[in-house]
Length: 322
Image (cartoon, rainbow, N blue to C red; front, side):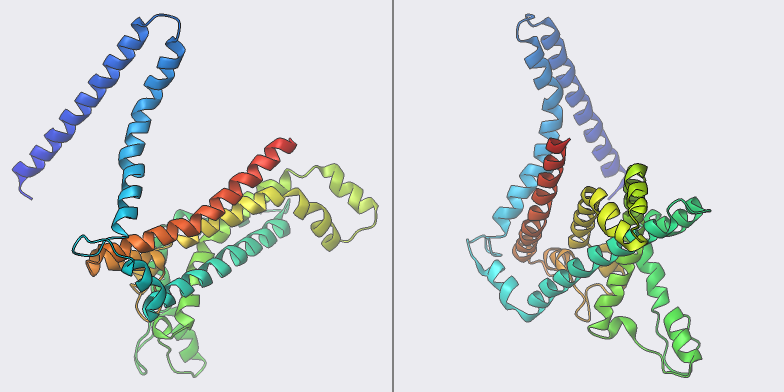
């Protein structure tokens, strides 16, 4: 792109923003001049209209466009082959299985570790420091985390100096270096470990705040009843933070279903490590199979939707109880 083309694009953007601002300004002006009766309604429409327009352009239209493309082949003809390919080809089936494995392990282990850590450090000396250490990976992007852990799993042939932490330990104990990211199915679980490392801090912070919200009277009453620490955790702490547990599990589940950066950075989906989001990118932009990529996007949406609906229903029930 030349400098002139870039300037032209910037001018088009500026002109578009000016026109948009002018339309909004005129809309607000006419609303203000409208009769008092019904003015509140038109004010509501005026304030919501810009957001709804942008939402339609940036989200609703692309969603329906993707749905349409998922039923079209390269020649523009209607077909079911994109979805048939997804559920019949070994590579695509392995991608779906990997995604299920991710969703089965990451939310469960991350939440369990975060909850255990939150319970153990609750009201302890240095609690803030301990929380900061575990939460720190959340400040790192998925790409950054992938690069860091790729160095941890780095492989060099036998006889060469090992710069990867895992292989350095293996060689130090007299073993041979292992190609961690090329060993199937171990490589999938090593990628999952990166996601757990990132999400545990999120689970810990949310659940720690929920634990502090439990009334002290309940815990003291349980102590007076002669319960031990495990009984108090099971019968007082867990019921008291059930809503937060649901939020944490569902949030991490959705993030796990959409995981792309870690897989793309560390293996690019090779060696049987691909997941739906990565395969969607590969098919649509690398293999030029837009229909297959769109079909995978629809499948991903279908998988995320029940989790979102369940989360909304739980939050609604909690609000009704309050």
